[in-house]
Length: 355
Image (cartoon, rainbow, N blue to C red; front, side, top):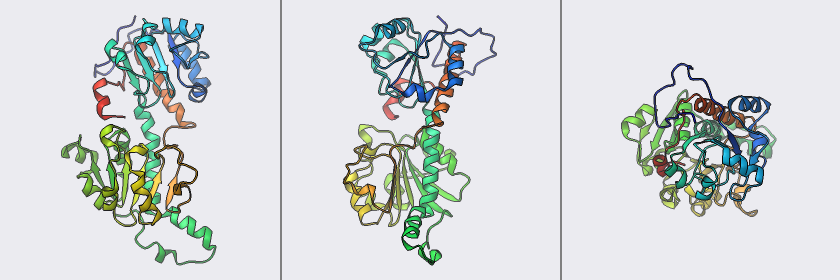
């Protein structure tokens, strides 16, 4: 089997190492592979690995015979959303497995302690998946400060001349303050995307010191100060026991009248029972791509409030953006075949404070 040193940070050298084509099995939820891989990806995958790209394992605990045979021979698993957990039993049936290349973000749903105990090398496309979420957030920030949702609703109702300059006094994107909660991959990309604009950026993240926050382009502040001083509060922290209801009634009450909350992280980070009264009264605005529960009940006010933009968890990769994830995964597979370390490895110690 080909040597691999997944913890090495050294850049790859010349391509003097002849590439190998490891045996590979696709493992993800039903229908995911059809959206992830186009004809170009199938061609490249065939050049990089020995695999049946039409065989996709949805169940590894009780696999069909052809899946069991492929799993027993696989050196690499190419996974994505809906991949089944790699339990002790599954790993026992995959004695040759040495690497998992995940064409999506978090690996917590299918990577188990048994994988780390066995020393399996893992790569994730979390950085690639962060980009569309950050782009969605940037658009939401600029539209929220401009009061686009409000003016669109009002315009639809009025259908007549109106003094918009008077009504929208105080709106706009000049010298407004954006508070970013969490210097995750997405949070960092949001800060980067905000650099060309005349905006002040605050950052709350207990794992980031003042020097690093300044280097990122944000002023480090406590959470209370961020909520008090921000026109926009955007949430990018991971879902952990410690971050459940990170924004509760007290924090939301600190936000100034007319401020906007943006949540593209996880619904559990915001106490929705505390948020709803703030939205129903119109004191706060919100852009919510995630909620708790993920699908609000049919009678939820979130569907109809004019100061709420509610979207069905679409900020992450979809449509053509899935091809970016596939490109990233195949780049990592090529590095593996040449004996180079993964460019975006996942290490177990990082999972305690990441998504």
